[in-house]
Length: 396
Image (cartoon, rainbow, N blue to C red):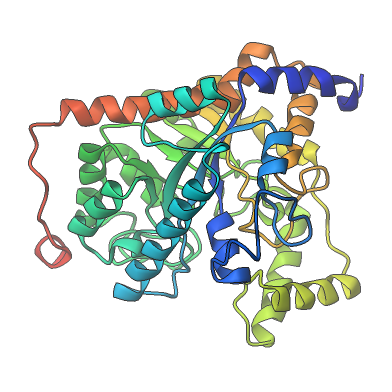
């Protein structure tokens, strides 16, 4: 049977165990396209053609929880990066205040379950890139106090204390201060997110973390050999750690043929004086002109399912999830054009004989469990004093 034959079954499953997605860049999209003017981009109505995300399509997609990325580009640094992160946090808070019947503030696993029971979308925050704390553990604690429940240790560039997957090696993984960042995140109950980091950083963080880690939006390197993806040896470490790897939908990370095409597309963007990751209307016009002359290799729902099949085989069903990265990418797979597409992915997995129990783990249960486990570790560390270590004191 084709995947389409399982559409009704997929939607019934999502009604009980909705998608808890690890990464959505809507706040960044609102920053880039409307400077946070929520009247110009009102997500209560369909924003197709402007955004990947709005409330009607979240509902259509069976989304029950969302980590909203409070991302700022890693070419911002110091206090500028901190201020921009605070603006992103404020954007999420504005969304929660504006759409209270649909979006429920969530800080804990219990909050996620309460939102599901109430038919609302649990809304959590994740900071994408350690540059957001400006080498300050006090700033890390401040982000936690403002509701941030994971931090990705790097974005596309190294920090002073952690190596990125897409930068030249700096400290060889985590520096001593980087290990202290992980320990302080464990003490707080903030999930350590290893998307974007170098494989050396992944292994260092796993050796140090007392709590389960996540990959909020990363797929399998064995299926698509891109440094942003997770090597099999790291996937194999997740059961002992208790962590969860959330497969992403970004074509350049999941489809081998798209890797080189995207490199050339981003070079074209830079030749026009724009950042390679820019998704503003001006940037998208340049992208579209490039694509018209250079047909783009197109990922599909099956491409994503191939990664999930492999990840389940290597790390087990208890350690995988979904992190689409909508509104954080210029291009999306066919069939997963926006947040309404999750039922197509679930139907594809059903056509591959995934059980209902396995799909419930993938969509909802693993994400809730990993946050609850991080909370449990934090409670066990309640007697540990906040760290006042500095980059200079540990890495000198």
